[in-house]
Image 1 (cartoon, each protein chain N blue to C red):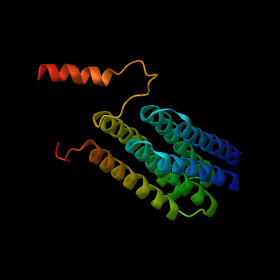
Image 2: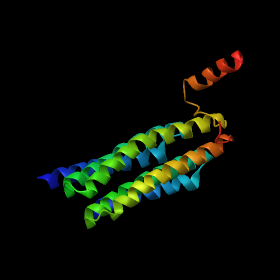
Image 3: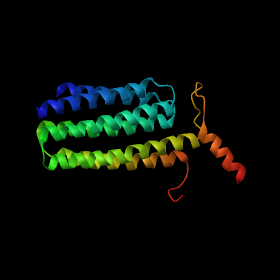
Length: 84
Length: 114
């Protein structure tokens, strides 16, 4: 299990590299979106290790919040309102 | 036996996530990165969730994992589509090696009609 967690952490650092380097705003939004999806995978592995469903609740709410946040960022980037 | 299948699914899922992040770092422009990262990360995380079924058996954890797969399969492509549309509309240029841009042709046609 430690191997899988280390590999996912490596993925997170690669996403952080993309967030830092850029070069445009959509690049950063994509990287943040992928970080959220990786975080859901983290929660799944934690729930396998501890056999508690608390982490699955975190995973579900994280997936939905990540989706809403990404949509908000994309709409903000597009420069239009939500009432289109 | 069921733990073995779980470990196989978990390995394949984490490998897909690693490939997604390699694509995110290595590919040349926003649209290519989006293509690699979203598909691979969706597949990888769904496989990780599916492996929960083989480790934990039937129970609240598995039901929530299946629910979470469903959410991810619906939300990830929608978010990717929104990001690429916003990037194209806010004027991000395609990579110089790109050969076709159907969305720009469609928008020019729509502008001519209007």
